[in-house]
Image (cartoon, rainbow, N blue to C red; front, top):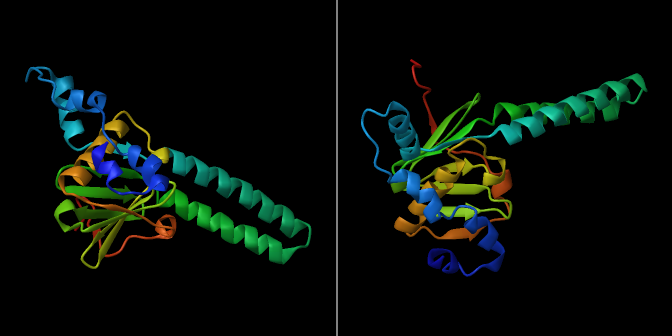
Length: 200
């Protein structure tokens, strides 16, 4: 699409296209339904703030943790304590990956990333810069704030396509230029933590 070609980077094209919307994605958002159709109304409400799960990341993290833990035990039994500690450290990182993976949601006002470790949110009106890795990890920059959005490759759920469309719409409407970043995959959230619903 035209807004993608503006970025002038062929390397970024596949990443940006993964967020671009299509008429098929837009159709359910504007379909008229009867107010008495509870299912359709709930679906319409969900599409106004589409959410995607990060089950893929959790599965990869869980498998990695299991394999690394077994390797640590085997190395310890073999008398190689240094290697065992290395595998154990990597297993802890894999466990952290599982805990840090939850959901991504976005509407026309905010983008939210939630996990066991916390809820993180950034308002679109505060976003002035967007970076993307070759794998599709997005980093939204605000004033002394940063929100990291995991790549669509790991998204799952019935509304993941609508979430891509929502992000693409906000990029286009707010004229946000996506810049290539070699460090986006290793970036963390900054000053965007919010309280969990129901917390004191």
